[in-house]
Amino acid sequence: MSGAEFIQISLAPLVIGVLSAIACALPGNFLILRRQALIGDAISHVVLPGIVVGFLVSGAVSTWPMMIGAAGAAIVAVVLIETVRRVGRIESGAAMGVVFTSMFAFGVLLLEQSDTSGVHLDVEHALYGNLESLIWLDGTGWAALLDPAALAGLPAELPRIAFVAAAIALLTLVFWRPLKLSTFDEGYARTVGLPTSLIGFTLVVVAAIAAVAAFDAVGSIIVIAMFICPPAAARLMTDRLERQVLWSVVFAALSAVSGYVLAGYGPLWLGGEHAISAAGMIAVTAGVIMALACLFGPHRKASGQRS
Image (tube, rainbow, N blue to C red; front, side, top):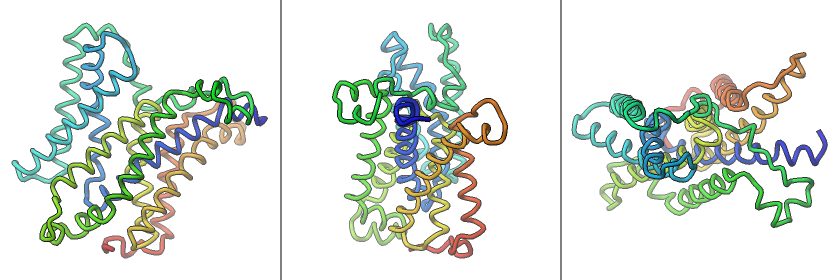
């Protein structure tokens, strides 16, 4: 593949994949430590009613109304999960299961009982995303990276996920100390005046925003994998939170790049004729990295310790 072909066909999908993986991995570190890792799975199930409502309000299959509706549904799900967990005094996993199955079922009923039943909602798109199709036709060469007219032709998913990833990174840096204290010692954090409940709720809302922003481009498979695999693998590499976050970013980026390359060229190297799903291969690569960390990570026998 020539340089021009790489820029047109692969540059935008690679960058979107990397940014999506990092945006999910950053809050995933704290969710893992708080034993809320499956919140990403829950969020990926509850966006359906939000998408349907977004269509009903806008009257068209448009990205932004449906994204806003999906984000709203994710935030509602977060509130319901916390309410069920605290009022019912049940385990977080059970609360997630109750909420996301109920909301998903409600979305199906809403879809069937409204005019949206005639609209094609692609299940495969929701699972796998459309990463391979996010090509940059105006990127005819490296000079296009400095051409405002060419940059205007970038896929809309790229600036959206870039903004979300940058915002999450900034929020993580600014609120590092409150996040760290409330994650490792909630009782002490409460005694020094930190609003631990608000911090926990905000963290999950940030995770919901990351999931929704990445959902349209990369699908729910990558979203779920990136919330769990890079942070969990990073936890097995160190017992220091700062290093864990850095490791998770490295693992997330490595999963996205290697998975995308293997999806496109792996079958050809093995004598196949067709590429395979980039989303699926990125998730598999993240799982392989997690497995290697389980086998060879220096802290695999002490991963339960807190730093």
